[in-house]
Image (cartoon, rainbow, N blue to C red):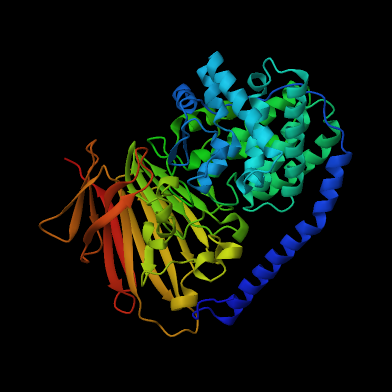
Length: 569
C-alpha cells in the first residue's frame, strides 16, 4: 500500500482503517452467500404478478425505432449490432453495459405504442433470460443494475407478458424472483452506498406486486426505512450531496407510494416523510432557468424529469434556504440567486461521484446563469472525470493547484476505493444572518490544513435588492502553525452565454448576458485574468467558456474582497 508522503501519520492510519473495514466487508459477504443461496432454493416462487407500478419517467418513441434498427445508444456510446443480439456484443463502456442490462430503455418501447415495439421488447427480455441461465457479464449482476432491471420489468410487465404462455410467464417470474434474492444479498453490502437504497426500493416494489409477497414485504419495508434514514438527511438532502440523486430517488419513491395505495396498504410514514423532505431540497438547487446547480456529480439537467417529479410530489414546499445537514446554503434577493456548497464531503462509500468543491458557489440572475462550476462531464467524456472533480474546476479558491480532498485513485488504493473521497474537509462551520441591507453567509473549511496549515474562510453578502453580490476570501494559519507561503487562485467559472470584457479605466471585468443583465466584477483593485474554461453540463455536450481568475500568494495578500455589481443604464 502506497500513500502520498505529505499525509501525516493520523491520516495514514485512517486509510489503513478504511482498507481493513473494506476487506472485512468483502469477507463477510462471502460467508453469507451460502445462506442466501439456500434461502432462494427453499423459497416458493410466486405464481403471478398482481399489479404493475407506474414508471413516471418519460419515454421517447424515436429511441424505440433506433433499437429496432439495431442501434443502441447508451451512456454516450452508440453501437450498431448489425443484426446480432446486444447481449452478445462487447460493451464499449461500463456505463453502456449497465444501461443495457438495467432495461430502463423498455419505457421507450412502451412510449412507441406499436405492436412492433412491444414484440421487440418481449423478444429482447426473453433473450436476456435465456442467456442469463448460461451466465452473463458481471455488470448484469451488480446490485444497482439488478435493482434497475427489477423496477423496469415490474413497471413494463403488462407489455412484456402480453400474450405470454404458461412457460414464458413462469420463466419471467423465475428471473424476477432470482433478481429479488440477488438484491437481498447485495443490499447488505452494495457499493456504492446509494445502490442499497435502490435495492430496498426494488425489493419493496417486488413484494407488493407479486402474489404472496406479504412474507417478503415486512423485511423489505424494514430495509427501505433503514436506508431512507441513512440516505435522506433531515433537511431532505441526500447523503452523497448530489442534486441528481434527489431527483432519481424521488422518481423511484413516488411510484412506490402509488403501489402501496394500489394494494390498499398505507405506505410507511418514513416513505411519505422522505418524499415531503426531498421536494423542497430539490427546489433548493434550481436556478431560474430550471436547471440544477452543478455540485458533487451533477451534470446535464433533464427539465422534463424535474417537472414530472415535482408535479407528482405534490407538496409545493418552498425551497430550503439553510440545508445545514447536507451542507448547502441558498441566498435569494430580487432576481439574484446564490447557491453555496458549505459542507463536508460524503462518507467514502457514498463519495464516488463527489467533488472537491467546498466553498464553491453558483450565481444566477433570473433565468440567466452567471457563475457556474464545471459540472459532471458525463459518460461521453469519461477521460475528463478526474479533472472535473478537482477544486480548480469549481468557483472557489485553490492553493498551489491542489484539491481540498484526497481521492482514492491518488493513493495507490484504486482497487479498493477508486474514485472515493478518502480525506477532505472535516470542520466546515457555516453561519447565516440577514437584516434590512441583505443576507450574509460565512463559512470556512480545513481541507488545506494538512498540506499548507491554512484554513480557507469565505463570506458572501447579497444585497437586499439583488443588485450586488460581495465576497471575501481569507487564508488563516492554523493554530500554532507557521504561516506557509502558497500561491492561490480564486476562480469564477462563467457560463458560456456570458461575454467577458476587460474594463479600460480600472482593474475590472464587464459581464454581458444575452438578456441584458450586465455586471461588473472587481477584486479590490487586484489584477484580474480571463482564462479558458469548460462547461460540461450543456445538453448538446461540453462547451468552451471562460473564467475570471485572481492570483496571489498567501504571505502577500491573505484577504481578498471581490464583487459582482449590476450595471444600470
